[in-house]
Length: 126
Image (cartoon, rainbow, N blue to C red):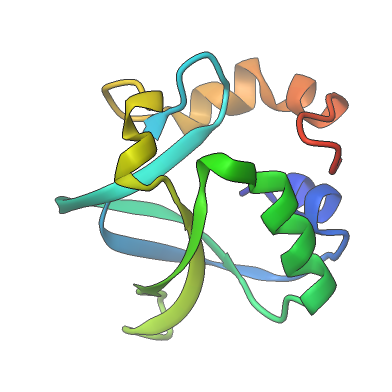
């Protein structure tokens, strides 16, 4: 999640580091500009990991992510840590039909949808 979107959703500004999540793939959510991740053994997802979330920030993220996602513990790799336990919002198999085929394009999101996404309030959290 982009730092400015994270700050707006979580209500907390935190430093982040690059991270890789092996065994998952990121796909577009049908009819939306944002992605979902699902278990996919031969794939990996790159992103950012934010450390030091408050309980209130985690609750805000849970509300924002909504019913499509389930928060679960995963093991990430960062430049400084080969095995970091963290939370990720994963689309459970029961909702996988809501994902479109193919990889979600982060760069396209930045150019075509990020500003609009920040102006919107998709789940009452921004």
